Length: 131
Image 1: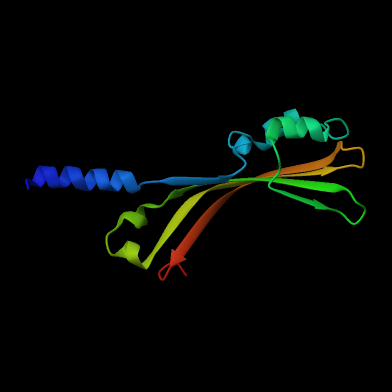
Image 2: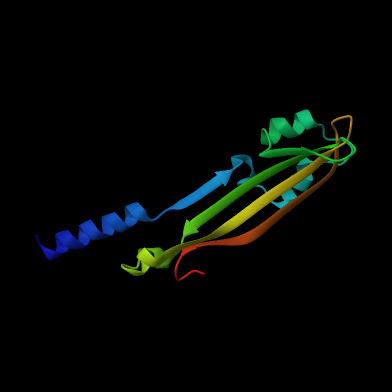
């Protein structure tokens, strides 16, 4: 096999492995704290309107007083370069990205009472060298 063919095959294999992963509610992918603030109005936006905009929440819970709490989450992470270093990648891997979370409290009339949107950087590590 020619060295150039071997190099091409290696590069294609690496490109195939390069990846990013996302999980959660895709409707939050392009949202920010500011954009959510333009779409949700406390005391005015209804649960039906929220569901039409964002779909179903990832989690739903209730307060002691019976108010509904809907939680939307979206994680978007990309594999770090260390994952592609031969032998080292056998010992562990890591990924970096962002996590978005939107928590909405509905009153008894199914209207947004309060909400909070946050976005933070996350790093996920596995294996021996990442402890």
